[in-house]
Every structure is written in structure tokens, then in C-alpha cells.
Image (cartoon, rainbow, N blue to C red; front, side, top):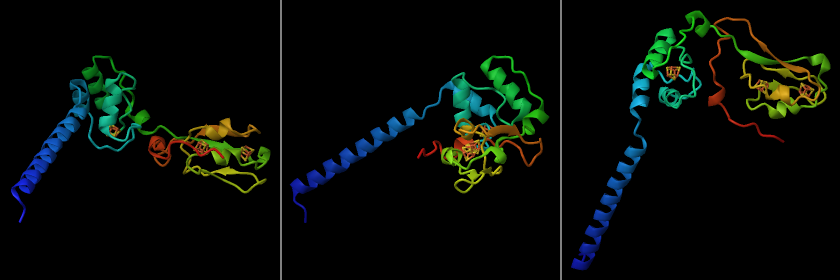
Length: 189
Ligand code: SF4
Ligand code: SF4
Ligand code: SF4
């Protein structure tokens, strides 16, 4: 059976933990507080969190818009109406883009001219998404499906035999803007 001193110790420790918990939860809630502009922008967005705008969530896109460093027409699911509504919230004239253009922007990917490739492998080492394959001293090639169009291989090819090109417009080649969600930096060997 605990003595009176031990009971006091237990009760005081429990109280301290309770107070610390309340303070921490208040601090956390405060740091998550969104500005009124951020909230208004968020209300206009569809809330699908699909990342097609290049931000992982609608909240991220709303944050970028509220900081003023972002285009209004990046939310493809929302389309021109959402772009116009964002323009109204921000008090700017939004050039409402053509819906077809928003939906069918073809992807830009790298292409290796194999006849000039000496197989040095520098492009492969700089590709952050493993979209290039090839054996040493053999012509390399780009796996189009994997390429996110960052252009790092173009910058790092000593033979200048890689170029970027747009795929033909089609639903299959739609730009899902997955780049920001994948591994961020290439491992340079
Ligand atoms: S594209 Fe639109 S719906 Fe998708 S995450 Fe961005 S803002 Fe949200
Ligand atoms: S453009 Fe970027 S993702 Fe595509 S192959 Fe080159 S380095 Fe890889
Ligand atoms: S860096 Fe250029 S030359 Fe070297 S493997 Fe890649 S494409 Fe070929």
C-alpha cells in the first residue's frame, strides 16, 4: 500500500503530465492554424488531394496560391471554373484556360540518340527515378513510362545525345505531374 508521500508523488506526476499534454495539443493546434485567405482558397478547391497540381494535397496548393507564387490553373479536376473562382478569391483577373488544353497536356520526356551514345552511364546515374537502362559501353535508352521529364540526363550527357521531346497528345500520355511525389534528389556516384 503506497504511503501518503507516495500518493502525493503519483498525483503530482499525473497532474504534470496532464498539463504538459494540454499545452502541447494547444501548441500543435496553433501551428496548424490556416490564414483566412488559405481557408477561402481551400474551400474553392475540389478536395480530391490527387496531386495533379504538383502539390501533394489541395491544402498545399492553397498554401502556394496564398503566398502568391503559383499559377491559378493547375487544378485539372477543378477545371476553368475553379481557376476563375480562385481568381475571384485572390482578386485577380484569371485567364480561364481552355479545358481541352488543361486536360490533354502531353508529357515531355527524354530521348537518347543511340547512334551517338557511348554507354558511359552518366545519364543513368543522374536519373532520380531509374528511367534509363543500358549496359556499360552499350547504347542506353529511356523508359518513357517512367520518365518524369526533369532533364537531368540531358545536362549530364557528355556526348550531348539526349534531348527532350513532347509525346503526342493523348489520354495515355497525360501529364500526371508525379515528379514532386517521387524521390527528390538523385544519388550522384
Ligand atoms: S489538382 Fe486540384 S484536386 Fe488535385 S490536389 Fe491539386 S488542388 Fe486538389
Ligand atoms: S528526363 Fe529525368 S526522369 Fe527522364 S530519363 Fe532523364 S533524368 Fe530520368
Ligand atoms: S550520358 Fe549520354 S553517352 Fe553516356 S550513356 Fe547516357 S546517353 Fe549515352
